[in-house]
Image (cartoon, rainbow, N blue to C red; front, side, top):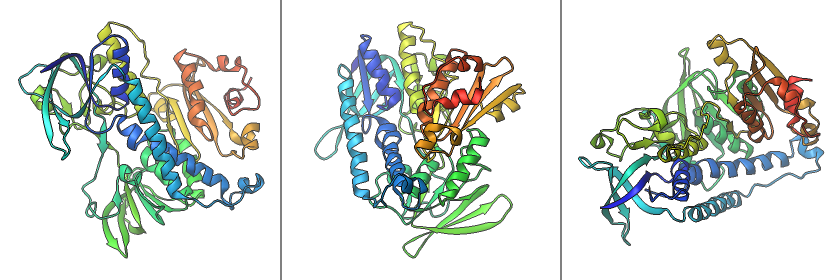
Length: 461
């Protein structure tokens, strides 16, 4: 049995960032990964999806029917999808190689880990070795363990989900052609990004969402504008509707659905994307053998992301708190700081997030709906891309920025729809981390012409 200071199970953002940080602080670290370093985010999530988002953005700009494209003197584009996918794969491989370099000093073990019953903080690892894929088992023990195994796509028990052509996001990222039509089950982040991407590539896209609106955790005003914009691109939305079955038809699929009012309908699609959320990846960990408490949402954690078993922690998607790669990263680093006796003062209540549709959506802090529910008196300030010089110069006039403050002017939330929203939201996050007010924003000089001027435009002088 091999002993180490810290075992980290899972090589995604929550795991590898913590591993590199802990090793840099002098800890003896063993990082165990069952598949590929980088986890979902790098290999089949954030990064490859963003590569496709960028290609889709370029495709939008070059479309002959796009007035902006004509105004810029662009010619119609022909999408070489094989080149799109080659670029995506090259970016992922470059980052994966860089990740290996950043983990120098970390003992990396490739294999599937599970807790060993009756042995304190001990994991058994089925090592990925042998020409024929046969496994050998080795045991590792540590003073502390961080579980960061992430999440896996959910699959609903709907008839026909096993039909050929019903894909998860992982499988859609490996598709070898642009489908003529796509039905997206689920209007969350994953579903909306793929709907936007393939619509830009020329696919006829339909979205079936059970809830009354897409992106339920985002500001309703912003989301409604986004949906209207996507509808203008040709995406059909079937809200308050549930898929009831999928059947093969003429080389494609027929998707049947039912609305909350009882009305039924169907649509045909070459490919169906199941994007109904992600579930904590707990299946092979043998949590019961270790006495670790968990629910359907994930491993239960308390202060500093420690489980009910002292010395065992859970970070990232596996703890069910917030499924974001950057949150996983900071949770992992926070645990290491806790083990080192260091206070990092990270405010996990201020977390920026973005959806890379076209146009992009980004937010940080509370929404108007949350403030109303909590009975908080607030004021909303708005500005619009159509009044911003840089936005007009770039042909990006579709969008708005909203700032929410309390009665004293303290910023409680910022919501952006439009070009560069995912980058601009960090100014808001920085301001909120320092308890800034709208008066503080009024005193900050923003360069002209830039999209960042939308902040000062919103709050006025």
